[in-house]
Image (cartoon, rainbow, N blue to C red; front, side):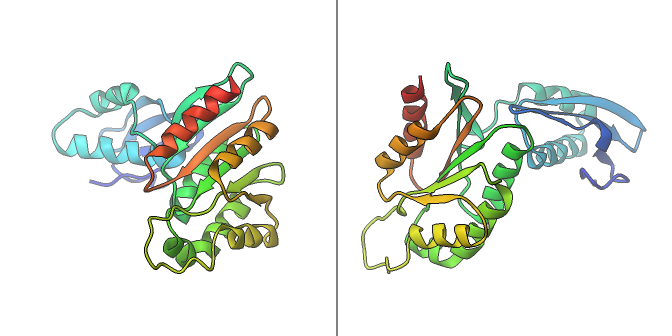
Length: 232
């Protein structure tokens, strides 16, 4: 059983001209090449990576004996997973807050590309999930934020989550901000997360999308919710 967005001869694929991305979802014509049948997919979550995941789910369902049209229709009611491009809400002033698990270069890139597929400035808040991971993949993370975001977008980093112990803390978020700036991006380092909220509230304007990114810290969702409440 094969599937893919760009694999047009796969068993389950899509018509590339049918893909319609919005801020909160994606539509496409799903093609079952085995029977030359086409079904309209309405997925209530945005991003080409989610469209690829949807095709995988449809292919798996079909391999299990479920009709393709039934699988496609079922995805209309899929509510998604917590902290995977989880839209917390939109303020009365038109600022949307999104909670996302993105914490490594590949996952962050997928989220940022989804955001940039529709108009509007992005304020990306990123909390690194430890000094060790930041040292390991910091340069690639910096390249990701610099490459995927535009000159009007802003990346804000607080200090990494620290759970104690003897981990080397000599290289932190300020290094990543310097690397983003060196690559042509727009980034700020604000050590304390609460101060980051102050900064975000001060610069946010109508039409902005604020995305809260990071892992290994359940309070990030509370942080995103508090941002929305503050903007309201």
